[in-house]
Image (cartoon, rainbow, N blue to C red; front, side, top):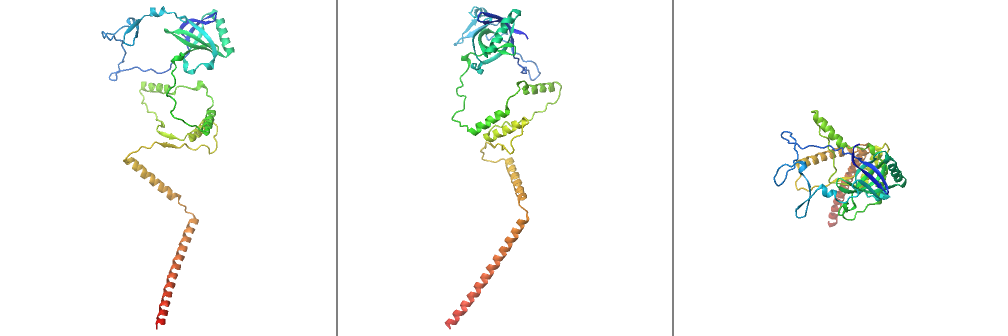
Length: 353
């Protein structure tokens, strides 16, 4: 690997010559800007604002823009004269437990390679000391024209250095947390713990960039003249209110199935997902058709669900018989009532005679 910086680690009175090597690389796919009409490349040219002429790289310098817009030229010679003890030295200032380093401070990562045979002994000494102490070294170094903060730790048999942001470069998370008091129930926390336990650990080497692979396949297909089929878009789930308990239960079951574990029988009902209702004064024809079709389906389902058992027929016939008996009883009552009225009328005539 090509080194990007040569210097030494200052470890008390010990000096370790080292080479700085990038420990990471960027695999992002970069695109060029083109003219859509003819496919010509679009380039950026550096033009002076005063004479509107293109300027070569050798004629470009640095300047600091003051608050009033005044440009204050700063040359490389000016910067070289500044006292910078870490210009060619990674100066270790302290050894601290790793958990004292805020992950928010983590920046670029580098490998520190021993530069030459004489550097092997002190390099190994520092590496083994870091291993045995279970600590990391906090150091200051200069790179690309500015002083930086770093953290040295051991990776396998190599000393690695992580660039760190200065503490005042970390912004306070003001106004980021959810507003208002949010209550989380113990049952929800228990399910979240269960989901965390079910997901467990992961082999970091098995993780890869699916999007970059898709872009590479797209480029290969277009380069060979193949027709690119649009990918199926999944539901993003926006604008929905989710039953948190049911969602957690389903997540636990899904995680168990993905790991080949059988979930609990009958556990975890489907999450209730309620779409946000849109208030509208008029209903569209499509919604009317959908509601009509849904009504027809429910009617057909109701007909199918109507019991056709013998017991139902018997109960129907029994009801009919009881109704007939009641009708006959009413007729007899009305006829008896009529005869009684006739007898009363005849008795009244005899009495008056």
